[in-house]
Structure formats: C-alpha cells, structure tokens
Length: 290
Length: 288
Image: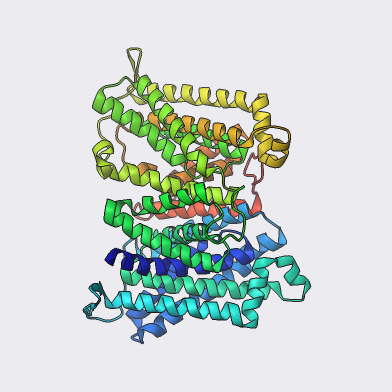
C-alpha cells in the first residue's frame, strides 16, 4: 500500500506536468521540448528568491511560476511563432528546433548555477511525518498531494466553466474553425503557454521538494510528460491525469521490485507495452500511430 | 601530429556513425535518436568478447553487428508504428533504456567502471597498433561503409526508400510493404553504427557507459542535419564539423571547466539556427 501511495504522490506530479504539456500540445500540435527546462528554471528562480528574500513560501512559488509563465509566452511569441505560423514549418522542424533550445537553456543553467542537485525546503526544520491507517506520509508529500489536487480542480474548472477555457478547448479541437468564428487564436495560444508553463514550474517545484532538481532533469521531466501523455492519449486532459498517475504507480512498483536504478527502464517499458497494444492511449484524441 | 591523427580517427569513426544515421534518417525519413545505443552495443560486444573471452577482433565485430541488428529489428516492431515526431521521442526513450542497461547490468558490462585494456585489433596476424596504422583501418571501414550505402541508395531498393521518405502513402499504394522496408533500413543502420562502436572501443582501449549516453545520439543527429540529410558526402562533412567544434572552442580559449557546457550550447545553437535558416543543412537534399 505504501508503494501505491508513493506512486500516487509522484504520479500526481507527473499528471500535473503532463496536463500543462498536453494543453500546449493540443493547441499548437508540436512537441514543446523547452517545456521541461523552463520548469527546472522555475525551481532555480524559486531557490534564488528563497536565498535573497524571506517571503512566505507559497508567494515565492507563485512568483517564480509567474515569471516562467511569462517566459513561456515569450517563447511562443518570439521564438516559435515566426516559424510555426509565418513560415508554416512542420511539427518535425518545430520539435528539433525546440530540442536545440532545450540543450542551450540546460547548459546555460549549468553554467550559471553549476551542475549540482539542489533541493528546496519549505521550512528550516524537518517536520515529522503523519500516519494514516498504517501509511506514513511526510509533510512535504502532504503539500505535494494537496497542491496537485487543487491545481487539477482549478484547471478543470477553468477549462470547463469559463469563456477562455472553452476557447482553449475549441482551439484544441479545430484551430481553423476557431479562427472563422472570430476568436483571436494567437491570444488564446499565449494564454495556453502561460498556463502550461505556470503549471510546469509549480510541478517542478514539487519535484524539487521531493527529490531535488538538476539541469539535466529538464529533459527527464518533459520525457515523463510525453510518456504520460502518450499513455493517456495525447491531447486529452483526462488522459494526461490518468497517464501520469499510472506512470507514477508503475515506476514505484518497478523501484520496489527491481531497484531504483531501473526506474527509467520501467517507465519506457510501460510506454512500449502501450505502443504495442494500445497506441492511441487510454483516452484517444489524436491518432499517433498508423 | 599525434593530435591530428587522433582527430582524423575520431572524425572517421563519427563519419561511419553519421553515414549510418543518414541511411536511416536522411534517405528513409526515420529520424531516430537511438543510434548511440547501437553504437554502444557494438563497442561493448567487442570489448567484452575480446577482453573477457579472448575472441579475435573480426569475430567480435561480426557478433556485435549481428547483435545490434537483431536488437534493432526487435525494437523496430513497436517503434515504427509511430508517426515521425512521436517516433523521435520514443526512440530517444529506447536510448535511455539502452544506457541504463549498460550502466546497471554490472555482471556483464562492469557498470559505471567501464571495461579497460581492450587490445588493438589484430586481423589475420597483422596488428593495427599505433595511430597511423589504425587510421588506415578506420579509413578502409569508412570507405567500405560509404560505398556499400552508396550502392544501396542508388539501387531500386534505395529509390523505394526515398519514395517512402517523400510520401509513404504513395509507396504503400504502389504495393511496397512500407513497414517491412522501414524495419530493414533501421536494422542495416544499426549494423553500421555497431561497426563504428567496435572501432571506437579498440581505438580508445577503454569504454564506459558515459560514452554512449543520450546526448551522443543527439550529437549524431546534429552532425547529420548540419551536413545535410539525404546526401552521403554531407554526412562526412557534418562529422568533421562536429569533432572540430570543441577543438575550436578550446583554441579560442575557454577554460576546460566550462568547455563541456560551451560545446553543448554551440551544438544547440547550431540546431536552432539550422532549423530557422536552412533546414536542409549544408549539402542536404531533403528538408525535414
């Protein structure tokens, strides 16, 4: 049971990452690889704030994520858009472009902040864990669980109940048609990039609470988001959530049965199994395989 | 002189690697980020078989190539179901698996410590020790690879490969089994990558999993895109550039502590600029 609980906690973070990734993917239809490293950058901002100012933790997370959201918007407006919209580049070109940018940003972070693992903590002292029904959970894990839960509910409400949310879903379903009914596509995509990057930074901060971050985790994070998305069915919000949870639980089972060094292998084995038997994912939206 | 020979050997081995990826990605359009794994399989096969079991060099190379081909064929079954951009990412995932297997299967691969003391290749009693002789061997391998791939690409089979690259639906309408073709191409590409790996292992005399990590796959792809996809000469040019760049950075005077990061930043920038300005690379015939 403890393994499953840990799996749910990690899976919740993966779900959050995958949600933001999926949101961006469904509105621009290419793999935004920069996403992972922006999330990691958020943690470095947070750490910088923590060392410079002594504000409440939640405020600093919000501020760092807000900055990352702005950077995400800028990356669409000045980096992707000239190619994707003006030059009509294929999604393959966009993927390679974004991958190149990921390498550049990752190494810039490594140059500025060195290649070490950093973890952050909410309070100076380590708080004791809690016990429920024979399961133990640390204070950090409780924070992670609650934050994930609130974020998912807020996003679901935003997408389901507000005008902007509906516009975002409309773009995900059919970009051309959305333009014809008079919605400003670019504005909506900018908002999507903001929300996606914002969420990625929050989830990376949660990961930093649990295991710490280093520059190379950017690639790992975005790969996890992609695995979770493909398992869940790429483009589908509910799919990203279940995919993330399933990935987290499977990984933790893998760690328990085979040892921590096989964690990545377990994740990709799960992906391969899905590709073989259910390539469209749990909740199909777009066709990935022929 | 020693330094130039060292560079020339590394460039030739990377030339073989880039050529093999060009065969897969440039001519058939299967842009794969799993090449470092097959490169690693070749290197480890040679290292393990010659050091631990005393096999001869040629036999170990043959076994390494065979092993890489078998693994590539098996892996291609789930992988090639995907469309091209999803394929890139999932093949990258396969490279992650490969790296972790090399790192963690300690009884066979000796884990992170690597394998030491790989002897210089001996072929029919003639030992290729010393850099000038080794360069000759590598150049022969490079020229053989070039001509074999050149023949395949110019053959009717190669025409179908390009057909699949340009429009796989048309290829399948013409009655070609697209998946079977793609699998065979992917397998042959892995074969030559393993050859490059075997040569690299005997050249460095020491291998560790780090030499076959994920970023190597990315660097091979950068060399390929820089040189130009779908052009065999371009691949060799790309390999020359990708080896020269860190050396140039060193000459410019960056300290050794940040040279690794600077090198990767340069590679990343090259990739970004190529995508924006010239997606077909220097000599390319195919725009991704």
